[in-house]
Image 1 (cartoon, rainbow, N blue to C red):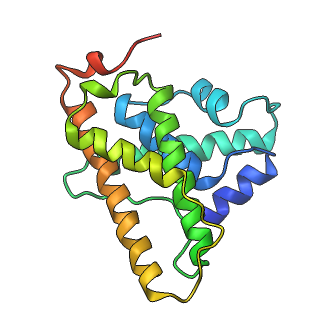
Image 2 (cartoon, rainbow, N blue to C red):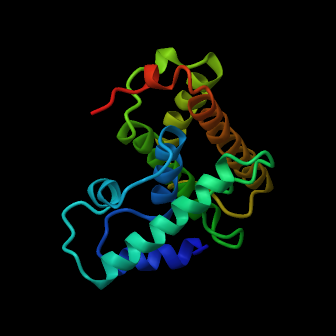
Length: 186
């Protein structure tokens, strides 16, 4: 699978306003509700107003491949989902900002897939979604590198977000008897 920097560079070359973590989060959120993602959803939600060209086509291809990986990872019994974030050698501020992007993308993906009533979700899922909303609103401009406490906190937060995404997926995808109650089909 393409890494964070490669996808960011590809998105940048296509003049896309979305970043790698945001796109990955969007795909994860969307795929918590739907079993696949169509190219028109990718174009409309992540690449709006971009003219078709080679760079856009490459982005769509990579995002489609990423979606296939996410489907396998998020639904696995081994909790294999990994968040597409900068490598550990990136600055703490950059990794924190990417996590906020990922959370915002995840929430956007849920919305684009049709989640309309969070009150129908379990208390645990509602709490995760509220926490993701708070995380995507964090100010990461003043995060300092070199602080082991901040580093440990970020790692714990990443793990919480990862497991929260799996929890939301499990509730929305595996509880098929209630799935249509959560969404309003367009």
